[in-house]
Image 1: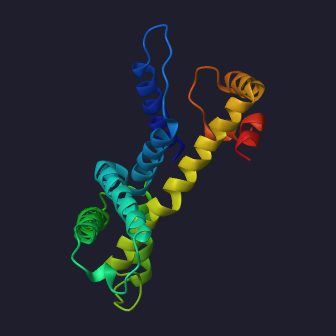
Image 2: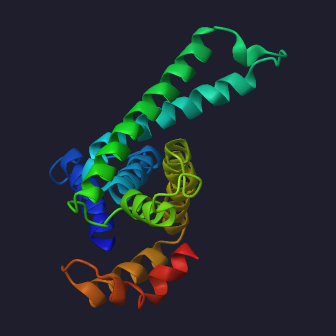
Image 3: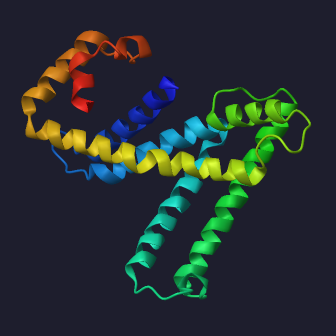
Length: 213
């Protein structure tokens, strides 16, 4: 999965470079950038070739979270969630759309696995293959489609906010300690030069790994 991380990071860096005027400086709000980065990474690693549909789910999940926060901030009234308010209707519509997209992705992946056309290079493919092997024709074993849909939703909630917050906080700390920036930059250039990082050599980065710890 490391090539996926590398590709997503390169695309983000290229976008940053294109937003900067020649020989000048620009200010970038990195938190939404890292949210998009983690959403992109999760989409690619979770859904493989269907990552564009995965990004749509990521965007819908983000809107759903914002609306849930707004709902929690309102005065609590018993049964409020069942009232047909504009916010409640939109949240239900988002949930239905997410489930519809996931059902389509899962259906395509299941057909590809049965026809031996799928590669086990994404989390959904691994989950479905394991589930099929466990069920093996027995209806009472394995996960239902609804269970798999909920697992796919968790891919985002479990990884998106925590990772983007960690990356943002890391940059804040590095900005407070420029000497750490310089040491980490020198270590990376010494280890990789201008080549793409690989898993084996990433584990050898002492300063870089300490920055995240």
